[in-house]
Amino acid sequence: MLSRRNFLAGSIAAGAVSQVLAQTGDAAPTVLRIERRDIEVNGKSASVFCIRQPDGTFGITTDVGKPFRVRVENHIEEPSLIHWHGLAPPWQQDGVQDVSGPAIPPGGSAEYDFPLRRGGTYWMHSHYGMQEQLLLSAPLIIRDGSENPSQQEVVVMLADFSFTPPEQILAQLQARQIHAMRDMDMPGMEMHGTEVHGTEVHGTEVRGTEMPAIKSKPDLNDVQYDAFLANSRTLADPEVVKVEPGGAVRLRIVNASSMSAYHIDLGQLEGNLIAVDGIPVQPVRGRAFPITVAQRLDIELAIPKIAAAYPVLAVLEGERTQTGIVLLAGNGQITRVSGMAEAASPPLTLGLERSLRAAEPLADRKADRTHVLNLTGSMQGYRWSINNVAWTKDVPPLMVAKGERVELVLINQTKMPHPMHLHGHTFQVVAIDGHRFAGALRDTVLVPSKSTVTVAFDADNPGWWAFHCHLLYHQHAGMFQTLRYD
Ligand SMILES: [Cu+2]
Image 1 (cartoon, helix red, strand yellow):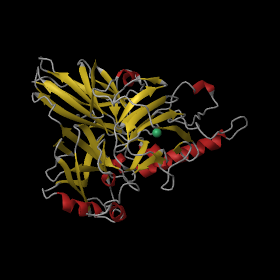
Image 2 (image 1 turned 180 degrees about the vertical axis):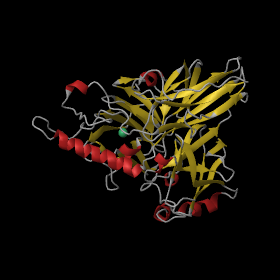
Image 3 (image 1 turned 60 degrees about the vertical axis):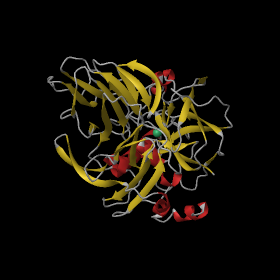
Image 4 (image 1 turned 90 degrees about the horizontal axis):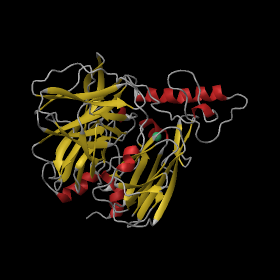
């Protein structure tokens, strides 16, 4: 056996995980290849990434009880690393650049092997650089036996797409902020440390905290995308999934977007929301459900007996733009669905979150430790931060101890919403703006502007774990922290 110390030292070198593997099993791993592929968006070809098996299957579908035994092969021209979003692997296999392990070099591979304790709708994505923006993500579905065999499963991966490379998008965001700083450098307009993000996205108007007129309105969508995709396609040429008239469908919706939140619009259908972030909730019936970046929704649908097309749409938060797929029952007619909803959607709220109740909540317990985390932002250089610290490897991790019940109080002091994600653990939403309740179990929670959300988790998976805003450019700019315990 490798000692833990040796293992940690070894994990700096590629191949450490496979050393451990040699001791644990010999069944052939599932191969996942990180590859380039061409897709067509708005009539133009684009080269993006993907994660697929040698037979072309995107991502992986597996079962609880089976080990997650995977070999990731890097077939692209740059290093990469895959994070298993929502799973609780040993931390060295969590796939976060600079935290849990070395990147996989071009032509290299890495092995993963850990038990799957819980079923649900998860996903995988690059946690290296900004590759996630280039669609380096895939579904990760774990069946647990609760599925209804007569129910057809439909996975919908949502993504935001830009022809502009992510590095350039970030540079533009930074340049716009600096430009805005200069514009704001005028008498009576002082900058304060936080809460100065918020230049107008579409033009030259400068907004800031000193202007009371815009205080009530959160800033949304600080990147302007060229397209929004559902299973890599726009509504100009959507994926059409054949379903049975009178049949049952389980939608597994994954918001794999880098920066964009949506309202899922089921149109004339009504659905039962049965799980969020892969974990069962007491069912909620509805036609519209919010989904922020990195979250998942499992929705059961009863397809009417009438042969028809039933679009499942995702309307961009605060905008009219929409994407989606079409469920086609029988020989129904497909009519073209516009890429624009009739009216702009509202900003996401915590209305649904407040009403969600975990099917199996955490045991009732007082917190042993509470961390108050202010979500902070500075316009200068597009620097997003936690407690005014933009993360580097030198930032001390949050301290917790094994066995503790930990609460994180997330106070959003900025004007943008932040979807906050904890690695390696599942947390429960236990308070919104001070009102306590036993909410959903999740791995990613929306913290709207000027709101406070408290989440609780049991420190039962020692290691070094990331906790960050899942908006790609916020995370990259420093709204990132870690927690670490033995
Ligand atoms: Cu953020």
